[in-house]
Length: 260
Image (cartoon, rainbow, N blue to C red):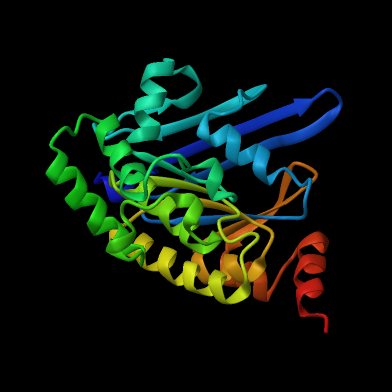
């Protein structure tokens, strides 16, 4: 069986509670190479808890998260050593925060932010690192003349594009995105989504994207899960779920968008 026919991420019966409050419960799905999965729901539905569990930032109370490494083996994310998980987050994984300041070194130049991730996996040739940084600034629509500028001098949209460049420079296979267009103006959101969609297709990148915006989910994802109170209440192809929602909560979400 080829890698394309094997799940990249396998999630089984994942659960996390905070005292008596359910953050995430009985979540099970597979994610395939090159597939984008949107996780949607209201604030407090468990979207961000799920994303942090998948990325290893939170330890689950139950269940498994397994990732297929480059050798083809499925490894349990929560049983990996800390050094192994850190290496994974620098190479095969990317994490795009809603607030780009959480994913950037604000006191380091734009080029330094991109180059730093390359150096973390062993790159040492300054000229080659700078060339790669210039390439990724161009690919994320940042003027090469800004390579030595600090991120603090960039607009919010430019900071988000820089965070994307920093994350994708190592050619990861899986990206986690937490409301990547949140807080941006509508016109900036549209431009960023176009960029993300193009890069996902170009790189064959798999992604899990958390969003409350159904238009974002429709534009960028192949498949969708709808969460309510920590549980997945509906899942399916994105257009199918949005055009013909079956669960009452999904219907409410869709109808709230369509109301004048």
